[in-house]
Length: 324
Image (cartoon, rainbow, N blue to C red; front, side, top):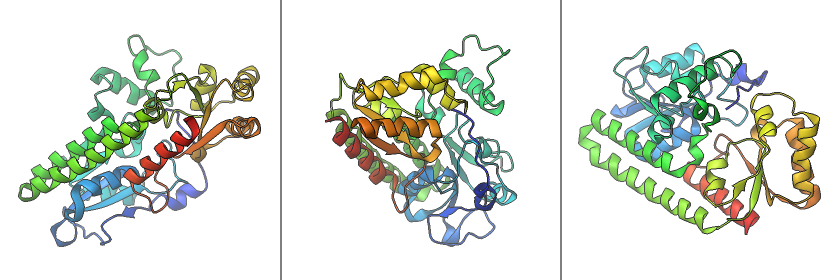
């Protein structure tokens, strides 16, 4: 849940977007040939929206590259115009993509907003609000009143790795599209059902890995929902995880403890976030390679030319090889 800082390429890439419909969008509330215009925070949610909307929607992702980071991205004037013009906005929420959460529904009060973290039902409204405030303030927990909000601080907002939450998100997208375009309501619901069935298969395959009794270490909590679905136990030292999330150096003794878990093979898997690697997380990965401990790489956005469902299937297949 950390606030990460990327420089350089961000200013150049800020206005880039993924137009999934293959059509240029006119300045109106609907796209080409009357399609519904959707803006999504990342290509992950853009792809899910496209699976549900099919050729009835025109979807644009604000972030569509593994070199961009939703945590630290700052919206451009072009992003604001795209967002204002959309009939539906899809965000991860929970402070992950504040750049779009802050704009959604503001300039266009009739706009529908799908918030994946809220749809998941994993947080109360009070905890959700506290989590977003926490992100907006840069995760400073000192001197604040956090009583009763421990769950919010521990919450993993990388919700797209949780199949049940993505089913709920797809279903909400379908219902919102149905309300915008009642003539095609059943098409949207049918598409969402097909998508949900695919995710049910992925969940079943993950559970079938049956990694109960095995432990893993994660350089960041990005894939934890999916790995936990296999039955594997998260053995990542808490101080290591907290330091990485806060973008702070991992204390030397904690880094040694983490690397020892790997070198002594007390974990059977190292899950590595290649998108936001640091020198210290690279050390952990190197230790895994040296010790012959299985390692699987994960990202926060879609690999090039890959859809969400096929991406998750690949992730599960990689976990199967690593944990079997």
